[in-house]
Length: 362
Ligand code: CIZ
Ligand code: SF4
Image (tube, rainbow, N blue to C red; front, side, top):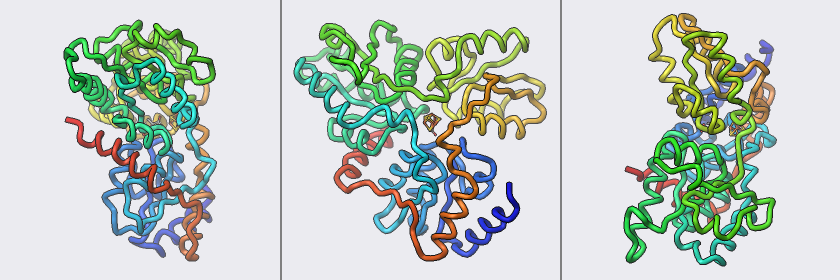
């Protein structure tokens, strides 16, 4: 990256000292990651932000929903900055509060809303987390999705007269259909037929009333535009080309990809798996490309490759580049707070309930 910009970022960070704390998501560019005080997935970064009450400014190098979570979990005095406001997440944008409320109204009209526990993936707006908190649900990440779903289904035992095993509970899983389906089917013994796909753009979600009544898992029709690109053909091709290859993918990948892979897990799991891998072993990794490249560089003794051949960055993550980071830091040095992300107090309160419920999972 531009040496002038590197110097400017370093100088601005030094001038701010402990007043600023820079968080870097694993999918960020190298040029940005070099200035992160800590790197992690969205969950780890939210916790790191909450653990720095003395930092006046949290500069979040990641996407919008992550900065919102940081604002919810930090003190009122702290300010969260997103270096480019256009760094959103297409998956989070696939669940809009109005649509989710419409779905909930439909479930109420069918008389089943009381049996449904809403669960949202961390990758959702603060509005959606607030909705989930208001309606007795929980947030989850890709590393605790099974625990969150176990908890959600167990809420049925609280319904008077319900048999624990045949409890009336259903889950409405937002917004990533793949994480919901993969967890329910591969980790919890539900069948594909127990899951239905609710499409917010179709009347009745594109489902019959009976399908909604019978479902154990109502999956919101959302997906990640990066992880959703990996295909079964990618898996088959790499197995043919690299005998003995281990295929390691994120649970945001499609069901048939996850089923065909050798290992599936969150970003932190993927990192640990490669750390523990034998020298000389071969790994095809199905996740965001900035991370896969860094992992390949960090493990020269192993063959670490990308599961897909065409370039596959997360375009919104990549919007945070060094010029944006320099601009944000220099604004802070000048006494201005650029691109502050705030969540209104009522939404933040209910979102926090759903986040705290996640933190309290056994
Ligand atoms: O796909 C993403 O954006 C992920 C895995 C985010 C995160 O850190 O949980
Ligand atoms: Fe959203 Fe996917 Fe990008 Fe993550 S990788 S920020 S889920 S679009």
